[in-house]
Length: 279
Image (tube, rainbow, N blue to C red):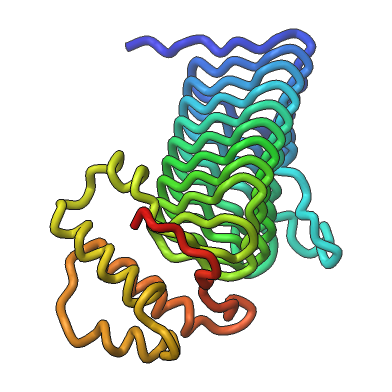
């Protein structure tokens, strides 16, 4: 198959060191800075910017005014020490005004997986690691060193504190905020408040059997409903007395790993202050 021509608008600026794949479209006033790579079939719309050391995979769509690969928003950042990088997978959408910062230091690059949708003015800070198939609604914000799993929905203007980890299939409601780790499959509202399982997301994902989902509800109850005066560690000890299916095992494994995390990731697990009844 012959290569598809690259289309670069006359007003676009492309650094000589940048590498462009087949079928790339660069719109009016777009800028591609030094050390950037743009994968096949990707599009940068008017005024979109790849600042520096940014790798964009195939078939990404970068909308007007998005700025990817900017300097870390970190007072300790010194360009002379480490410029850092941003690595993005395939088939992501970055809407107007999205900002993603390069990683810096020993934590490595900022990494964005495949099939994510960043809505207008959403942000991921330096050294974030984002999985696949996530949605970040308008104005949502990930601070530096945040890890996000797969198929999460971070609603409008929700915020995530630095060094927090969010498990798979988490739903954060609008204007929610977390400064503690969020187990997979749950819904968060307000500040650090797990309210129920993400039943809608679990139903749509179809990765787990009905028996596995039933076990997950049991697992959720052990941690969030049945603990009473017990500590979280004792609740987990009780759970280890039996074998669990994939969903419940993933739920418990996440919690075990996060409560054992060393500083600065030793942030604890989001509690349940006000529970809903749909789990």
